Image (cartoon, rainbow, N blue to C red; front, side, top):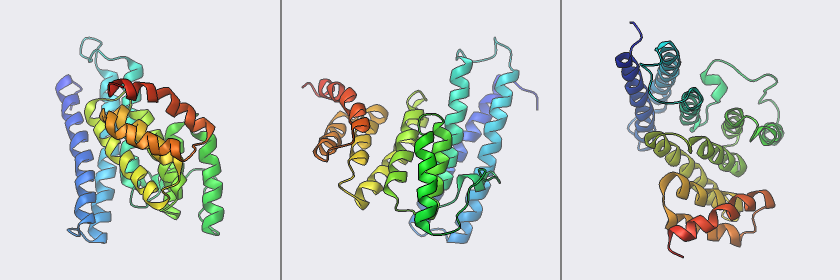
Length: 250
């Protein structure tokens, strides 16, 4: 198949179909319409196909002439590809699989041997150091923590936050997917530890930035402030409160 705008559009449609299928698959499994074995088999197939499609999109886009390409910068194209790849990995890992396992790889030095506490502490330490240096790598690390400890509040919260940060410059469909995934993780973190300020803070920001929900954002940010967030998180909150209040006409 030769590269052309038509073929590239077909690949994008295939990517969107696979992302929707992953979401639908999770819902079917959640409500008992799929048993665990069928769910895992189908999910592995969708993830592999999505990864292959994303690679084809990147390759096809790079071979089009300047006249054929959409009026989008190369930086934005690369950013969108990284975002979609991250989204596939996150969705694939939500029910407890290592992201690295999906691609047949494991990060150097990773191990789940020993106690849960030792494993998660080590990976969390690496994730914290990676947060804003390489968000995609940090997302992978937090997903590894959740594979060992699904109720880890810090991993749920910061994976969601990084996903939201990456998604801010994406298109509406990807933002919607990111909002659904991030909100799910943040709400779960809050249900586990309602006093964990970071989750409330980031939920407020996610609601405002990705869903244009100023009222929902205000509610979450109020709870955030009541729980004395750490200084670095409070900095994010302080920068958005005025925008939320303005949107509400305050």
